[in-house]
Amino acid sequence: MDRLLNFTTGMSLLLITLVLISVRRAHIRVEYSVSWLIASVAILVLSRQQRLLEAIAAQLGIVYPPLALMLLAGCVFVIIFYRFSVIISKLKDDNIALAQKVAILEYHLQTIRPTDSVK
Image (tube, rainbow, N blue to C red; front, side, top):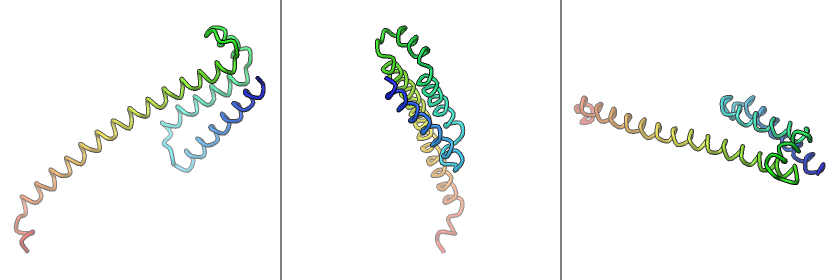
């Protein structure tokens, strides 16, 4: 049990470090890094607080507490992935709308100045 929790602690610390480095280098925006930081800190706390983890495992009806931690971590990451899927879908729709507006503007510019294209 301790080996798995120690591994989970190390991975959560690694994730926190990677997110902070990515924010510092502007590879990820701050508003998107908050979800990752909250999730990794929660996993870090649960992997270090065995009594809390055991209480959560008992509430979930899971005999092996680290399994409860992995289940919770998986659920949190699925929620984060869903949130980012929604954001990406909205950005794609906005991108399509923007491309359509640019095409309309180009068409209007060509119809306003037909003599420029003849020269």
